[in-house]
Length: 309
Image 1: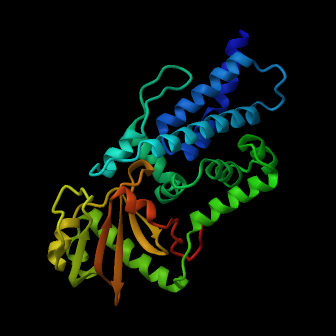
Image 2: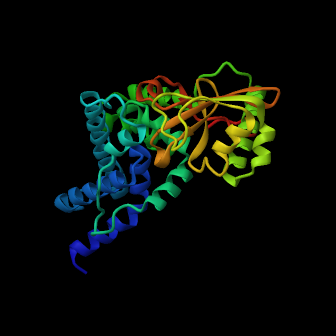
Image 3: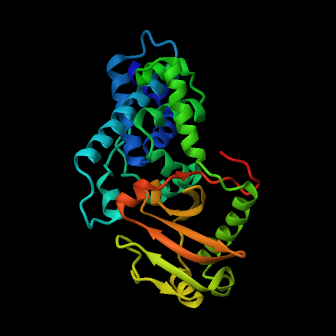
């Protein structure tokens, strides 16, 4: 076996881990594969001589590549903000890039990416997307993959204590800020979960039972739902709008209460803010404009048993 074959074999044994790290940092399977490819190229150029811990070296390399990608992404957004009237979907597509992995392969499979996003947690990916690059890298490395803060510090170019603070801030953002009692959040989640399940299953009668007879649906001007964009009133009309839909919708904390985010592959397109009374939904406000979405306080919703991420 040649040295190149041996090195490639060693790299392949770490590929799944590196891809998982990169995906959680970038939220895009194609960009994650690009980061893994770059790590391979750097390893191939450098060789394994002098590397005592190949797994640690590769994780560090991927993390640095991802940090550069996140910083570049942030700079592009600051210099090229979404144009007025552009849909959230168009803005999300602008941030996607193609990529490959160590050996030539097919482009990232959208279905595979959707499954991966769901396994990570779409709400988590949405909140991670709102973090500063160094915060996201510090949180992912330490909280999700157990990398020591001393090693995180070297990657983000901060002290160990500063790296600890970065992860702490990210953790607080993920948990969200809420003054709503846990019992109230649990009741909200029960109703909203049932609403989403009925929507996905196309259960019209169940939707009616969860909606107040005078429920009002209020989309903002940027909402692009493939249907009416004006205010809709009445349980039957709103139930028709949602029946058989909500496949990409997931529960999240929105401004401190249980809400709904629509985020294919973790890229936030819109948020729905339900108002509940007496165990029924009395209003559904849709937020889709980029400016309004950026003002929302998002977090990972407590699980049904009351535990937080």
